[in-house]
Image (cartoon, rainbow, N blue to C red; front, side, top):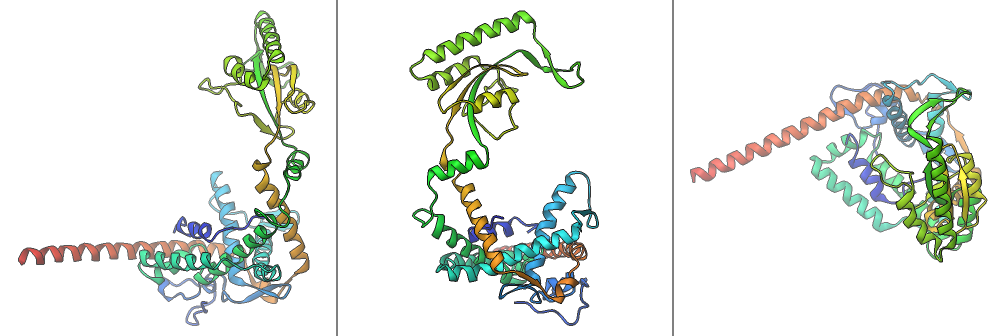
Length: 414
């Protein structure tokens, strides 16, 4: 679970969207009015409860409905993007997996995210760190600027509501993420008390994640442009003529001999790769010139077995796979490439401890949340809000154009 680390990242999210409040007693719960200007609480009209309703607690911290619904919307949007790719226009909310419907699963995931965001300011205070005031000031100024560009605070609300956000909720989320960043910097940033050593990072990359890095020269013994079905029924490539294969083996022996005799085998490897390797893209460019970084199972079994048996800087012999003859050079990984991932892993472990220390308890209001109905209502509200924003923009453009014409006419009369 990775949190936003800067206020600007969340602000950019809002800018890229298809763009504390109280419930409006003149509206029925869960009813979207035709006139969106009547809405004061987007959660009330989409979910039937006020946004500040406490639906759960994490330790001694309240989790409110607006937090939950923001994460429901975000998770559902991600699912919708996936299903839309396969031609689906609605989410399969009622399908079950692992004993839960999609609706239940989305709601539980949203609750976990909300719980984490809720406890972060408390955790930050306990760790002796604070949210960056400069970031929060920049955030507020950025929202003010957006409001001015959109035509006022009401238009900013419309834009944010499309993502189940309000200005207040957005500020709370950013404040939590800034506490997260401050905790991470305290322990794992430059000069942090637990900044991981390169050896620890490489152990994580190699032993835990299984990454390894190699370069190779490939001389093909098959035509990879012609697929065939083998005698055992499996797919494969058409073999080259035996004489051609024999010629390639001889060439592989010559290349290997050159590399073994070289004072700098790695430098010569780069040169010979460009000259001989047939591991090429559709434009004839040699693949893997910077080295392949892979995990077990990504390369052919023959290649992988030979590569993992090598020490750093060591050359293999001639390795035969279903593609042809390989000469492989094992290369070391760079700790800097995995520092961020390792830090996230360490932070994930801390997050698990925080949540164990701040268990989630649901209130009766939580059981009233209908994720499916909320998302359906939000979809309708989004369309209405987009229309209101478009109308406001058109009216502003017409007024501006009219003002310009009037000004020009007055100037001419003068």
